[in-house]
Amino acid sequence: MKARILIVDDDPDIATMLEDRLQASDYGTLVAQDGVQALELIEQEVPKLMLLDLDMPRLTGLEVLKRLPKIRAAEDLPVIVMTAHGSIEAAVEAMKSGAYDFLTKPLDKDHLLLVIQKALERDALKRQVACLKSEIDGRYTSIIGTSPNIRSVMEAAQRAAKSDAGVLLLGESGTGKELFARSIHQWSPRRVNPMIVINCVALTETLLENELFGHERGAFTGADRLQKGKLEMADGGTVFLDEIGDMPMALQAKLLRVLQDREFHRVGGTRLVSVNIRIIAATNKDLKQAVKNGHFREDLYFRLNVITLTLPPLRDRPDDLPLLAKFFLNRHAKEAKRYGMMFHPEAMNVMMQYTWPGNIRELDNVIARAVILSPTEIIEPDLLVMDAAALSHPEALTYVSLPYHRSMEEHSRHIIDQALKQAEGNQTKAAERLRLQRTYLARLIKQQKLRQEEV
Image (cartoon, rainbow, N blue to C red; front, side, top):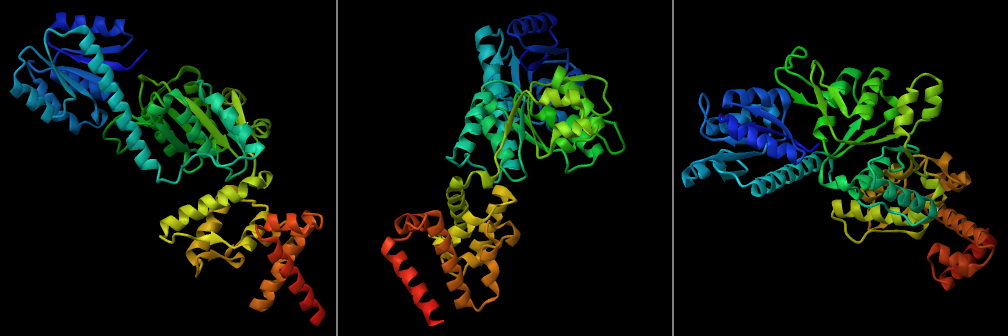
């Protein structure tokens, strides 16, 4: 069923006619006979759109329009005004008071359905923009990488996006699970509707329940008005449940019902709220082991585990590191207004030798710090603050206690030795790996031999 529409008209014949037409087009309907009843229904049922007659007893359509901004549940509710008196003055006044469009009676069926469709599409776009503005700060972009590991996951994600099946994203912390979730949403038919992100570990159980399901007026002390939960706000779109492995067991049972029936009760409520959402969940935990330990519901695990994508750690996709490093360097340099920054070849070599236990998030942070602290436009290796224990060759850092020039000489010797070993002694291949001219590399090797002979 499509969106639920509230019909407000004191003429029962017109109300019945509209109800029949809308239900025939698969819309849900609610009917109010006057403005007072309409305002009560809006707080209780939260329709997606209202068809509002202007001439009614007790409370006119214009008075209803003017009261809507004071009702939390009616925030941004699209309203299409109907009247038998198609005066310019009434139309202008209705539009000034927030109406989306103005129709005169008798209503043309096809035109009515077209206006409703456009109003709902506009509302969906407004909600999407609002969510994007509040949750995205411009840091999200397309997935970067050409290695077979990441390409295979990306291709599977693109295939999964075409369906409404639930997706479970697994992988270490910092591997880009939220970015994949956003990409799946953008590749899907739901992309015109919001994607809502919910962190299951950032809130207490009570706050998380309220965040998910919302609450009714009077549900608890301080609940002076109805509040929609994020599941309801995402209607028609996607919900991304981050750190699902840390969700409390009591909420897991409630979430299971949402996955099964696509409906739930708000906190303190008795009426069912139906939603059309797609669930994408992510965790860095072993959910199978959590099920065995009794920390995660088995039935919920199987509901979530329709399509599982495991994101590879950065250490398993070394070919992508230069692309990612360049992307982060360009982004942070732009933010710092330090255009034209680049990595010293030795800095890139140090990053290639590192195992990145914090994955892409750690790479981002390391480069951000280097951009801020670098005195020149060249990122030197000593500005890359990393955990020595995570280096593929920890002995490479033994020179850091030496004087500056001696330290740089030792580091240069180390990376050249490593490049030659990986190239099996071939100086041409070693120079390509270091992104140096072969003649320059040969000169560096000769200088190192002369210094060793002098010692």
